[in-house]
Amino acid sequence: MKAMIVMLLLSGCSLLSGGGTASLDGEWLLQAGTNQGVAIPLVAGSTVTLQVAGTQAGGSAACNSYGGKLQVSGSTISIGELFQTEMACLDNRLMELESAYLAALPRVTTAARSGNGLLLTGPQVELRFTLVPPVANAKLVGTTWILDSLITGDAVSSTVGERVTLQFSADFRLAASTGCRNVTGTYTISGEQGQVTLDPYDTIGCAAELGDQDAHILEVLSHSFGISVDGDRLTLTAGDKGIGYRADR
Image (cartoon, rainbow, N blue to C red):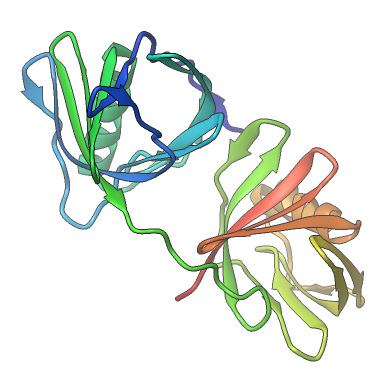
């Protein structure tokens, strides 16, 4: 699926903590919120997050992922050029939560951090977050990585099909699936760059809707690719294409 681009804007936010400017870098978990006097309907077992890293912001909106660019100038903050993936959750409660949260974000005008707490407010809007403790980086080798996103330029798409995995073993063998195929090969890693020599593909029988995902993964793996591990997240990039995974812990 192609990502649906959703333009949201947070402007005029002051980051106040003890009278000074505080960093928002990190991952924040939504604890409670209201929009125009109506409570945002949190769902037990679901997560809504705001992740900030320098000039990037985004996170999970309970069902889909979202992200965009963040700008800070003095006490003013803006988040724009946001995208949202198009995965449809079977639980309507998650879709309602996501819709309410994303509707509240454009109304935020101020931010106040107090220790591990963050309060975003605006006209008839209040969003309360707590800081998520940093997750130690998962090991690239020996971890089972689960595919959860396909990246093309600034657009991120959700995945389709059954559980799709990637494994780098200690004997320099790679085992991956694409939703259509099982793929094996040998790999080399130098710093943050990797290269895979793929064995002949084992074709399971690609369904039509899996064709684009299959081709996307194989295109990344067939080229020299960049490797980035951030906590339990792995991203492989080749040119303007990438594939995102989470560690199966």
